[in-house]
Image (cartoon, rainbow, N blue to C red; front, side):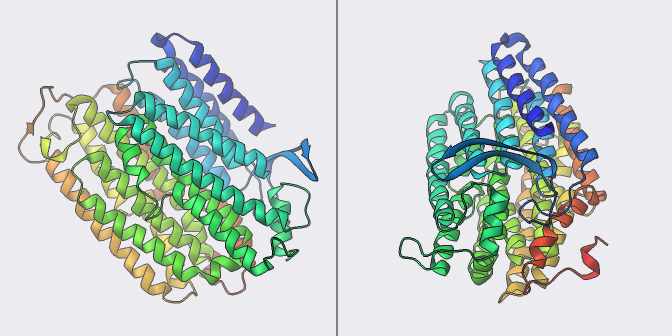
Length: 517
């Protein structure tokens, strides 16, 4: 019952914070958010699952199954548990939420109890997304995540917050509807009377398809695959479905941007891995060239857009579009390094992107501007923030011994070993994206941090307060820790993706059993 306790404690904490006076809401929210951090770290220390949650050969950690309700012929169960794919994302969600809450102490001055309560409610929903193994339960949590983020942008955001919030909600909600239709079409074509994801995955692998809606099995698989792919691609987001993301990031308060880039985007890639690439690997293989091309376009186009921006938040926002392209490339490679690297990169990017947004937020808290042209030479005035910003930027560029390097290395190894047409060419093009990333990040750092001091602002540039610097220092240490000891997560990730690789005879497994060398 550990997962239930984790979600319940977070929900109760959200209600308690919402009822608390504004004067103590921030400190109370941070204190209570440490409870799920402690719980997730305990789960990580006790983790003993084997294999993949959607394979009969796999076992789950902290699994609970209980009959819930019956809808027609279908039984809906409360089914939760974690494997090596979901466990790292649970830890990421709890740790990043606590740090985001602390980073909000300076910028959030109004309706504080509501703000922090929504942050905790979002955390509880994210935990549900990463642990649910019944589709209906999973979908409820999936939709619940949208609600707090909508209000966080729409109430505490910038001048165009209403536009950004509505655009975010419309894009992601329509995408969820398309995804829901695609998945339910699969379910109706299978002789199953449950929404249990492992049972549905096993029925799909067994080929237990019935002709439905006048469509044959193969046609229905393709239609369902792309309906789900479209729904999840909006959440990732991939080009050309990315336009909601920069608007949401620019208008959102910085702590909400941290959660949006650090965890919410991972919902899309996690769902692609669980649904499209685990349940319908054959379709993914058939359309691998198209998916890989989409991934490379996202990498290059996102990086080029970032290169053209002057707002630091927009630069980091478009960087996320580029980085998520690497995750898609790893998934479509469909081998040990590709799938493992894609999952590892979800965690690595969550930490690094959250760190980048926090650094931008700390600068904005003091200078009240994010425009590259309005700032120069602030490293002398904010040395700790500048040092962490530089470390975060190099982490984004894939500096060795940082988490981003390990994730990208695994993905590139998987890409070069992939068997679909032009895999090596696509991988080489994606690697070129790192050069563009280095270009715009080095340009931004040189303009903002170094050179003669200048700030076109009426505010004094002073060192950040302790509660602003502690979260970014902790995050950069975590990025370094995961980069120097990647097997903290990669071992359990590899154990969970190996059954997927073994189920595809055409996939090439990594040499040496996929061990990190």
